[in-house]
Length: 205
Image (cartoon, rainbow, N blue to C red; front, side, top):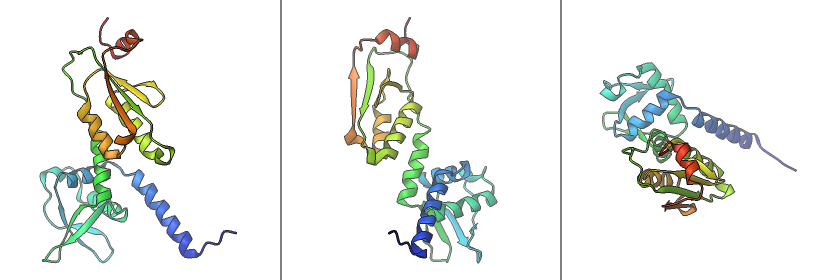
């Protein structure tokens, strides 16, 4: 028989709420995380109502974020434990990324990565094979989504193909998601249905 105390239920509800909040952050929260990731710390104080108040002029990178929206976003990020407050000697607080916040910010950064290439195909294929276990399903889904975002096409289940060098981008994603041990990267000179992929990637007639 399941016996849950009020504290158990309250704790679970709180964790579920934080998870939902963590995944639905909007552009203001995303930009704040990226700015903090770039070293642009922010000095604040706490009001009696437990709201953040920005007390210094905004760095150029913050200029297009309205102060009130930024303060609301900071409260949500702090509640989700993505930022931490470091106390200064003058009684103010400096907001910095927590470790979880750094990982989240990197996730937003990687979503902006694009594979740069000259347009001249070197007649080689980059094939990515991954076998990420079921108990790491979130990482598996995220890795697949990042491959799609980078321009990979589905070769078969748990395999993608791309026609241009992309080692640095793949390394970044694998390290971010901690899935390197589950991923194999192959640079191939030929694939039997090459004509199909040439058409799909618009490489050669």
